Picture 1: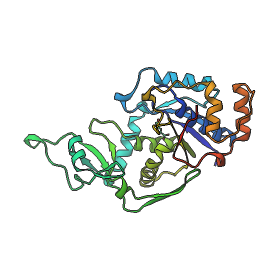
Picture 2: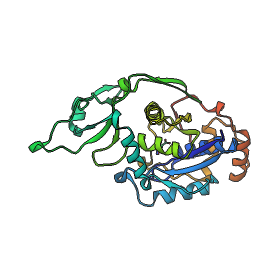
Picture 3: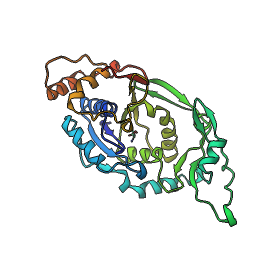
Picture 4: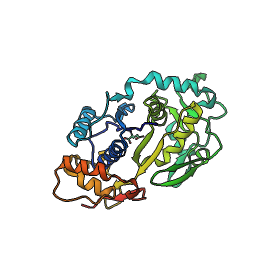
Length: 292
Ligand code: GLU
């Protein structure tokens, strides 16, 4: 099957070193296989969006020489598709009217992550005066563990039911969840290969659950180590990590395990990287500090 890759940033800020690494690795993996590379703006979480960030990201990608194919898709224009998917999952989902406070009080915790204890599985409680409360839609997670092989991180298994719990497809404020939208869009765009940061490794089993329930193909996955600072904190857009640009490409390639030659211009370096791309060199780690 011809390779179709994608970069799917959330426009919550400009690209920083960590997101440039993800874009670059996805682009190199795709282009070295002669594939089509798509860009999708994951702009569903309106309260977190920063005006102008989507344009800044596209300008940064272009400045780095990471050209994409076709129009840039925005998730905010595809709500009908997500609604259709929620409808299709109706027999596997239920309304949940738990408040944030109730969730905090009742959630079971494993390794610091919160697991929904299934409070509303058997029906939601009515609000004041018997009126239905605003509710989220949760997926009733299947009991079977999900096993998948990541091209860098190896074979992983997760019981979504036990380790995550019934997860949200649509929030009480109507916003569709990332897990749902990403699965619908990867399938609609014919994505064969997902290359992204290992902070999303724990989301992959949830996405495979949804793909199976919706009868969609599962792409190949490659999860890169997440770039951290020396305190081990993710270089998030929100932590005012510096804006990434072409000057960061040598360090980004080194982060991906490549021994880059000195003295090449940014464009030549990208050509060199394309002909030397080897995912086997990527450190098999979930996080890696960036050396200054
Ligand atoms: N939009 C997500 C993010 O910026 C990435 C989604 C994905 O690659 O699956 O973290």
